[in-house]
Image (cartoon, rainbow, N blue to C red):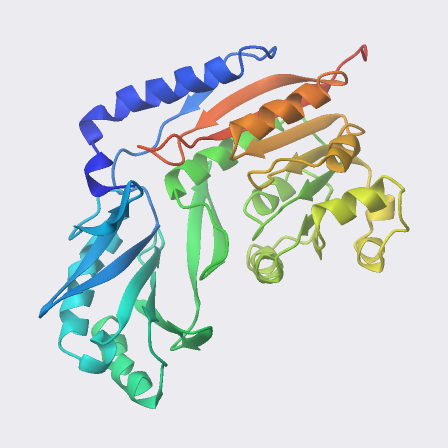
Length: 368
């Protein structure tokens, strides 16, 4: 996204255009009225990445247009990024500019911030990080007491204090706390993430029993939903995300959630009876689990056929999608057994064509 694409005065129109495009794509499906959740028009992204452009004595943040990837666009401020990122951008460059070992061969800066004022800053280099760099970066620690710094160089990662932030999301007036680790998946738009969690709680308000969750990430949905169900078994393939999920479950005081590190395809094969149940699923108590709801939040490729067959066996399906086209294909596959009773668009990425979509399906009384 180029900085000049962020036009707050055009936000309502672009939101309406997205709604129209999503409605057009889904027109062949039988869906209820779309619920639309708007983003804040500015300062909505809690993370951002910038290239660093060296021009003689000058040093500035740069972004690029995919149509002209060789021409840097100077980016002194970025309206999409959180207010804290915009506050830190000039201060960080001023500090780095006067410390040669920190400035030399610096080619990218990544920011990860929270709603509570915490920041993680990653400095990426085209040179080895050495003891001299480690000593110099301590000056940044002193100058930016609320920030944590990481150095990266040729597959080397140097953590100065820590490589994560602690985010707090407020959902229906209740606060939930999440560890978010550098370079791991987190929802970038905190305001929309809160709305998605509130919507998930609303659509499952009459649910009970157990919840099976696949692609659970750091427990973003697992933790608020755990209060609604007797037991939750959640699966995730990323080791970093699983570790964060387990920590987040503990710090939020949840005692009925088990997280298993396993790919969705392997989970589906096991629960469909194609292979023997792995020890990790047995230890999580999946044999005694009787899910009334399954939650899936897959990557852009959507659900594979085996996972579609697995979730078809469960009465209610909560599907969070980052790709409406693969969602549509999965809904078509599920249409013989389930019907969509709630349908929402979340504008996670303003000023782009991307949307997050949520659907809640229930088993038909008469299966086709």
